[in-house]
Length: 377
Ligand SMILES: Cc1cc2nc3c(=O)[nH]c(=O)nc-3n(C[C@H](O)[C@H](O)[C@H](O)COP(=O)(O)OP(=O)(O)OC[C@H]3O[C@@H](n4cnc5c(N)ncnc54)[C@H](O)[C@@H]3O)c2cc1C
Image (cartoon, helix red, strand yellow):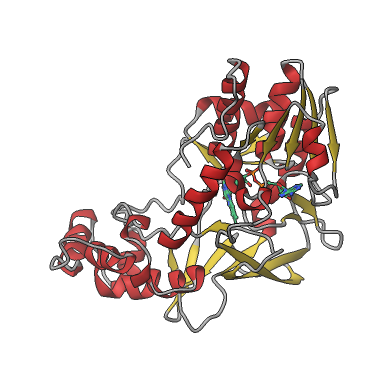
């Protein structure tokens, strides 16, 4: 079959590769001038540093199949994310762990003692937490909430934590040991030559053609037997019911010599500091040596039409609009909506790849008609 894939990010690349291997001819288009979507990496021409152009990306997964898959296309080197935060004029270790607690309260507590301290701080009068704020206060009490959650969340989401659902904070966000590895997953790493080289290897198949700087047109869709759409769900329908809300990010780039901050990611918890974090890209490739260094100050705000969508805002209002678009999509034969934009969900890279592989499995089972979604949206 002739397949059109809209978007040359991980979703489009993995689906295209699997379909090409099954004998289908795949045309992959992307409106941007590069492949790899939001995972795109490129070398900074001045310093040689490998840049995570759309923000820091760390690969982490418990999915052995996905780990094997990415290792077919890239050499992964060990990398663990160890984030720090500057709050109330001090630097702390994140996620909140025993070191953070001892630094913050000026104590030398052992795990059980720290647990007892946090339990004594937690607001047990909140029995049915409704908001993010309720949930955080119930878990950690006011001091840690103010220092590590409140300001950061306000900046990230542009609203008070009292307006965000409690479900965002599902588990107690505190570790009672000195483990400061940001992720719990078994497999963690960084592709040695960047994500774009990995996606280029995935796309390297004789049955795949890639056209960049090429926004989708309905004529392209009409020429294909089936379309996999990894662009924005509402974008496919020309936003005719309104726009699904996204947060976007502004990156303020600056360069200097040597080591600017000593770590890849430094968060800023205080509300009066306008940015959420500073990323120093050279620390994502600790096996490389560069004299210069490139950093991004990261600011979050609501995405305007035409701006890069980063994080879907799935509050009540957006969910109602989403349902209407999902109904429209279900009534549109010949198109399957995939990936983080096509299904309007935050997806880590490993989940994106797993879902892409499962989408192809549905297609290969000769699902007729192929559904609009292969996941619950
Ligand atoms: C700031 C940030 C940090 C992240 N950090 C991590 C991390 O540390 N670890 C992790 O596992 N995941 C991380 N992620 C998630 C990761 O970026 C996604 O899993 C991944 O990008 C999803 O790939 P995708 O192909 O579904 O979407 P995308 O990468 O967004 O690709 C979609 C592509 O479709 C193209 N497109 C859209 N509309 C059209 C159109 N009309 N015509 C043609 N092309 C179109 C776009 O240009 C884009 O290239 C992060 C995400 C963000 C936003």
